[in-house]
Length: 374
Ligand SMILES: [Zn+2]
Image 1 (cartoon, rainbow, N blue to C red):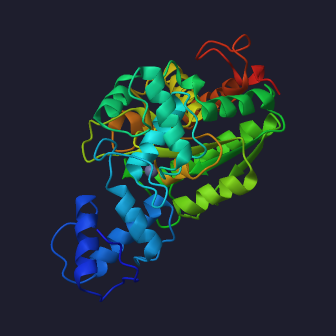
Image 2: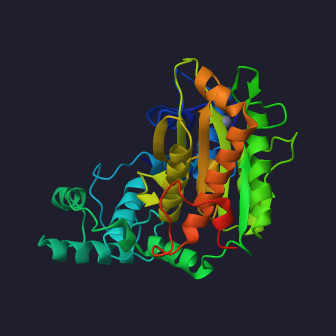
C-alpha cells in the first residue's frame, strides 16, 4: 500500500482516512465505523503517539503514518530481507533485532529497519543454526528463532552494561540519588476505600522513605508536592533530570471486588521488543520479597509492564501496588502508621540490596535500617 504523503486531521475524509481508520482498528485502538477523521479517531491517534513516543497532536503526518504502518507487523507475518534501495521496516524487524541481539548476534541498532547490519546478523545466526545462510528471514529461520532461548539474560549486552553501572556505583548508599514517585495527587485521588485515599497513602509512604534515605546520605527527590498531580510523562522527565540511580513509584491498588488484595511490583519489560530492564527486574524482585517477608500482605508477585513511568525513565524503575484500599484487610494495615514504617523500611532495604555485592548481601527480611552501608 502506498503511503499517503499528506497530513490528516479532524474533519478530513477520503481513501487515506479510511485506510488510517482501518489500521487503527486492526491495532485495536479504534472501534466502530468512522467515515470522517473524527474526535474518536484523533483520540486513538493520540493514544498511539503517546505509546510510541511520538509527538502527541492527534494528527497523522508522515512520521505517525509510518509508525502506524510499522506497528501492524508481527515477527513471522512476512518474509524479511534486505532491500538496499527500500529497506523494510516494522515491529517485526524490531523484534528480530532484539532477539538476535539477545542471542549475541550484534546489530548496530535496534531500530526496526532491516539494513545491512541486520542482514549480517541474520546470516551469522543461520550459519550457527546450520540453516542456509542467505540473510533472509523465512519460515525456517523464524522457527529457529522461536525455538532457541538465550543461555541467560545476563548475556545481553545492554543487560551487562546496566549491571556494570550498578557494580561501579558501589555498595554505599551515601551519594546516590533516588526519585520517589507518589502516585496520583491533586484532583486525582487514585483508589479510595475505607476512608483512605491512594494519593494520600502514596505521599505519606514517600515522605517516610525520603526521611530514611536522607539519613543514609541518599539524595531523595519526590516527583510531586503533597497537593500536585503531574502526569506520568512529567514524572519520568523529572526523574531523568535528576540523573537518579533508581526510581520508585508508589501506589496502592483497588478493585470493584472487595476480596481482591495483595502487593505487586512492576518493572519495565516489553515482550514485543524483547527488551527488559534487568536491574529493574532484580530491584522489583527485592522490593517484592522484602515486603512479603515483613508483612502479611498477599504476594501478587512481580510483572513486566510498559507503563510510561517504567519505560521513559532512564534509570531502573519499579512501580509498587501496595495492598488494596478496597479490601478490608489491606486497608486496615495501610491505615496503620506503624505498618507504613515497615513498608518504608522494606523499600529502603531493597534499595540497599541492589548495590550489595552477592557476598555482602543479607537474607530477605533480615537486613535492618541500622545495618545499611552508608
Ligand atoms: Zn495508582
